[in-house]
Length: 108
Image (cartoon, rainbow, N blue to C red; front, side, top):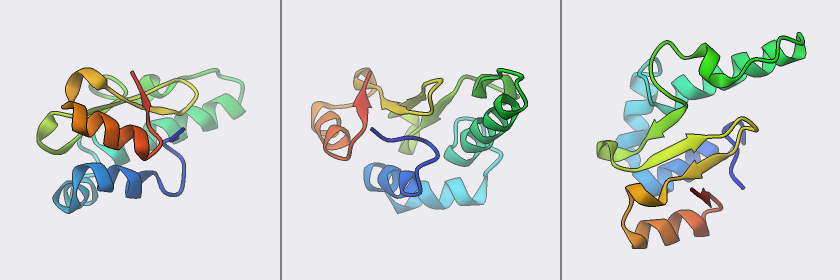
């Protein structure tokens, strides 16, 4: 299981998406459907839950759904309410589905 708040989450995503994708994440953390944008929303939702507000990450997104787009916008990683990132099988070739699963991503 890969969670968005795991210390190695970005490294696992980098193994799937490559160094150019990582540079884009770091250069534009405010970009919807990026790792850092979704991580910020997830963190805000967890802080809200500690205050008994009961919020979800999607409540803190200005745009879009709780999804990270891979390189070229093809792969999709969906954030579940428990913080797990799930690799979308329908947005990948079978070889990449197997690679994502080997890295620990659940399939959706």
